[in-house]
Image 1 (cartoon, helix red, strand yellow):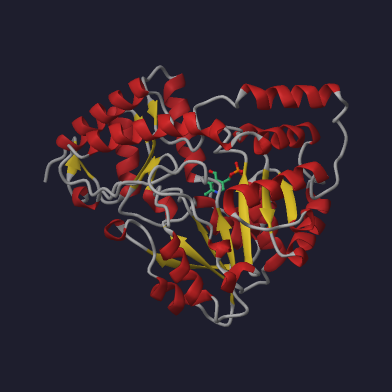
Image 2 (tube, rainbow, N blue to C red):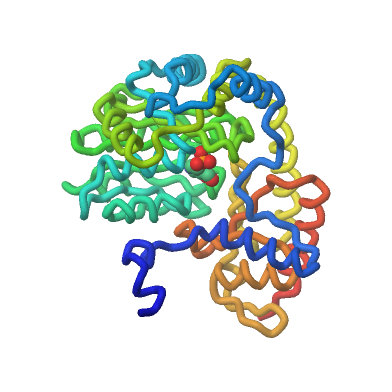
Length: 401
Ligand SMILES: Cc1ncc(COP(=O)(O)O)c(C=O)c1O
């Protein structure tokens, strides 16, 4: 029997995470001595603030080394309610909150709790890579609603309306968005809420994990709208805003029956998040929200720099990202041109060729449902970004018909 025959159909059908794969390829090339600049990573290049690390150390010394209640420590669930009120004007109670090992697990729990085979999930595209696979793992069917660079990658409400069927379970999207950095305005979200509202059977999963990284305007939650409030699940976490990716802490605020269902799943799968990590999350969430501002200013300066540099590359189509730390240029003008004798047909080939040719790691847009694009993360130092932009310019200028 081959090893593949021994594996489940589920895992054989699962796509590997393209972002993690590209980061690994960059590491492998580095290990061979190549000078690779990685713009493929999806995590802040800052350390967790020291007061948060101190809170974890203190929690360990105070004996927070045991299991917690499955949905999280009550003081953390209360802190999350305080945060949702303070930052988003949303009213939730601890019974609505489930803390998990990252927002990724939160979305996994939700899909396992809500989807029957054949149920449809409308996913705004470009999408975060894992949405599709997590939906499929639960037997769900992803339904794509796309927006391109000319629309700043923000979907039309009419397209959402026409994607809704009897089988639609929920609509799933992130704002600010990974991979595009687009941020939906209050008005845009209201228009989306208005098309969902008449369909009682449709819920909304609003992934707000980049909420603290917004440069233009303010972060808005679709949960603020009366007509979808009771059917909206807010997903958030500590990874991006507080530079706590390795802590694995995320959470949802949901109608009580959904929170209970997710707790039931989590109780059989992980038993909940780490106890001392949860104590640190309390400190982070109850701190002055301005603690995340410094990081945001740095990201903003980098966005300005990288956008300025990329604008000099004739043929790249750019949408200026209003949040997160990604830029998602449309590179379709370069398809069917060649680089050093090889014709580039799509974004997979382009990302690979850029890595091999000028040693800059990006991620192919195909992984995000946008095969005309590549994703660049600017969670890198100013010096690295300057060098990477120079190399990208050299690469694109060397392409010929
Ligand atoms: C849009 C989006 N949602 C969720 C996550 C997962 O975050 P966590 O580290 O909390 O699992 C990510 C991480 O890249 C993301 O980009």
